[in-house]
Length: 277
Ligand SMILES: [Zn+2]
Image 1: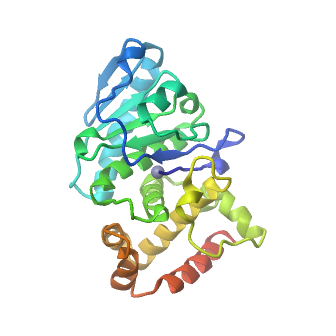
Image 2: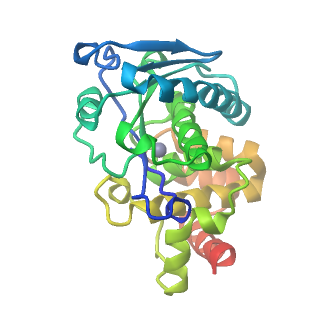
Image 3: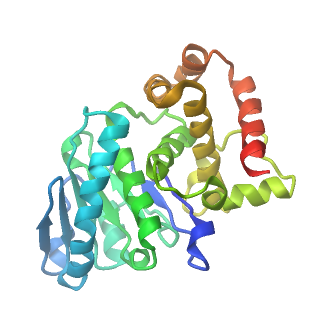
């Protein structure tokens, strides 16, 4: 599960997200039963669409290829390093492909994976694709592909704020987008003196959550803080340790950051105010 809200950049466009389902149907293509399929192959990508979206698919190829390179630079080489991107013909077809009843209106794209790396793909929301500017689309694609790269070490016990925050961390790397504009919801909360008391829980990341955008931004800033403390390699180490199981977060906090959960939350709250206050 995941989303990525870029309200500060969208100027009236509904918030968009990027959700990663933990499991999707392993064999579904772009729903071939719902019309002819156009397949375009890039250096590290295969983009599948229907003819009406062929132009959009062609426009995505370089974006996806560049994203694969960027994600590999950030994560390392221990993942497939190639991605299938599917552009369904409609949100209904997207729902059929993803198959887990997500609320898609605010979602830009979803990363799905079968249990093996072979089924990894990104499903783009056709209704929101056209509304994304190039800057936002770049972040969304990288966010989703970061999920695919990290999938091999991510478990259902991995905290959602870390899963999504890390994907946003990779998504925004070298984007040049200021934190304050990308984290507009959280910035407004700080200005209202309405700081969250804790890191966001899993429910905050559901597509219907009223605080979806802010939750992503909170996770992102937590990962920025970790990277600031121990560097990008330290953040990777943190992710790998914390992703392992139910008690792994505490281990990562102690081993990688030398801190406790409670202290980390306090440091994160101070960091949010420092960045956005
Ligand atoms: Zn995500």
